[in-house]
Length: 155
Image (cartoon, rainbow, N blue to C red; front, top):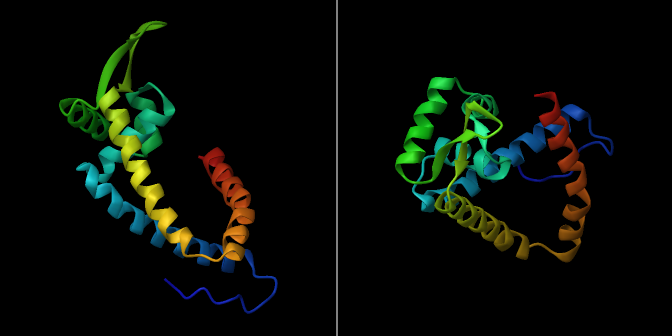
């Protein structure tokens, strides 16, 4: 990752900001992904499980769209997650033709434990920051959250 040198201009361009933000996000996610190894699940299974746990029961088609994969890929992932007792299929009571996938208690536990490990790793990093840097980050978070929401709305 590039050093966090200040921008050359007091008004950096959107392209400069995007480049630095992209680099920082990639490096941060790679670092946090190491915490996922403790779950024993491959990244695609963890990602699908996350959508199911935090998004509630979901159809296979909607899950495939959320994960940006083809339906056969999501079907294979669900079979693997079912075999591990992390998800189950359920008939939609409103439309018995529809099958939804939902997390089991064990699947929810696995995912929440993984999130706790990731958050703990971030806490360790944030603890080393000065109070001033933490306050700066706290002020920047609403902006980052808006960027993330606007990206989701475009999908």
